[in-house]
Amino acid sequence: MKLYSGPLSLFSRKVEIALHEKGLPFERVQVPFSQTRGYHPKDPAVLAANPKGQVPVLIDGDLTLYDSTVILEYLEDAYPVPALYPQNPKERARCRLLDLFADEVMLSAFRALMHRTEPHAADDPRFLANEAKAKEAEPLIAGHFAKLNEEFSGKSFLCGAFSAADIAAFMAVFWVRRLGGPSLKATPALAAWYVRLSERPAFAQVIEEILQADRELSAPVEGAFRD
Image (cartoon, rainbow, N blue to C red; front, side, top):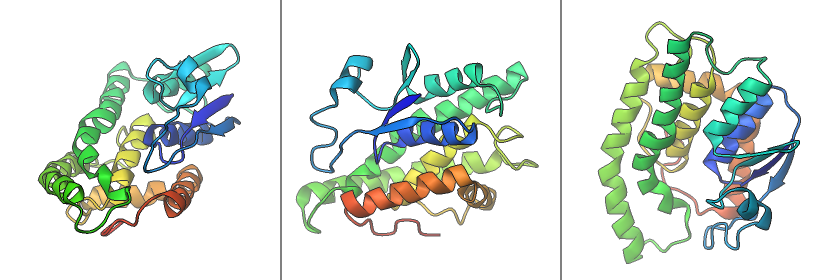
C-alpha cells in the first residue's frame, strides 16, 4: 500500500494510526507543506487521484481511495483483523456517528483555532481578529469535550472496545490541545482516555512525528497542550 500524507494533515494522521493499529505495512509519500503556502503547488498524484486535491490518498493495488473515513472502512473490510468497528450493526452505526462527530462537528468549531500555528506578529490585526473568533469558538469546543466525556460511562473506549471512533476523536482532541484550545480538566474521563491512547505505540509514533513537524514548520502556540 502507498499513502499520500501530509506532515500536519489531521486526516492523513488518522489513517496512519489505523494502518499501524492493524499492523499493515505501507509506503508513505509525504506531500510538501508550509504554513505560508499550505499544500500549494499540490502534488500531481494527489490531484489526479482526488477531485478535492487533498490528502490522504491510499493506493492498494489497483484501488485508489480518498477521504479518511472511506479509507478506514475499506481497511476494515479488506483487513478485518484486528477489528476497528463493532460487529453489532447498531454499535457499528454509533461508531460511525462518533467518527463523523469528531471529523465534522468538532472540526467546524476548532477550525477557528488553526491560525495559531501560522507565522504572525503579536499585534498583527489579522491575527487579533482571528483570535477574537477563536475565543468565541472555545466554549463550543469545551461543550464537545463534555459530550465526549459523557460517552465514557462505564467504558474505557467510546464504543466499548477500541475502535475507529477512538482514533477520530483522539485526533480531534489532540488537534485542539495542539492549538491551545480548552483544557481537559473539566472532563476527567476524557482526559484519562486521552492519556491511555497516547501511550499506545501507534498513537505515540504519530504524535511524535506531528510534534517534530510542528518544530520545523509551525509557530509556537501559547497554551498548547495545557492541562
